[in-house]
Image (tube, rainbow, N blue to C red; front, side, top):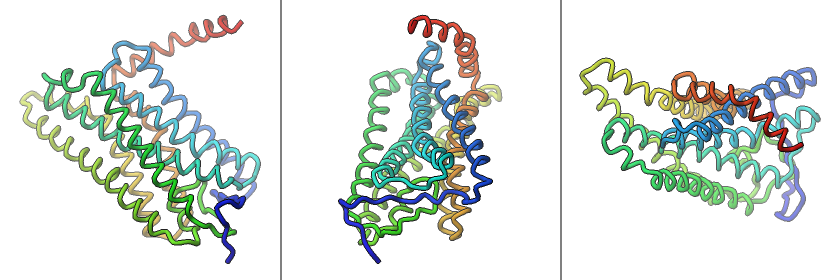
Length: 320
């Protein structure tokens, strides 16, 4: 089998969901609708946090970062898929594929790390309420956010750079709707020992440790809540972390589903459905979880929507 060298021009083929031309318009409309809902919902949360002084707290600061990560997460894969569906082309360039791998890992890791930071924030708020504003001061919050971004970008760089040293076969068909790192790795004709070693190492750093931190935080949170004598106070404490717990369950639940579906079955269709849940459905649902279960966020969004016409009018007046 022929091999491509690193300087040769190569294109990958994203096989996607179906080759049936009758299904392409339906899939296009479905994923375009999901993408627009995801983009609009997460952007609304970011704007609400920025514009409403009631939301200038550590929890909402990290939530706005999470919403930005979710926008980036879906924007890495869905627009290219929509373009391929519209043009009925399955081609993605080598550089485009590596870019997808890089940004997908960046925003996926960022989601993971930010959820851990938000669990720590809830742990401090419930278990150490009197020291909350001292511990979670603006400087600490800024450093936690900066550390999350730096760690995610570094991890993605390490994983993506290892792909540059690989030789790929000429027939490079990816049974997916985007360039997923493990799927691309399977197409390599050269030895992937270094790649697998880096993946296992970073999985421990960015997978096991954050999940352990989240589980420990919630163990402490639930232990503290159960010691509260008042039922009303218990409910109030649960409500402050309920949205985050729901998002964590959805994120890790769908992520585990992707892993199990690829490990248990060889069916690419099953893996595709699981990946859609992980990459598209979860970021789309996050804004609804945080807005519907949070009175402060719901109020901020209502105020933002009520001010939207005047803001748009001012913007147009500024352009004219």
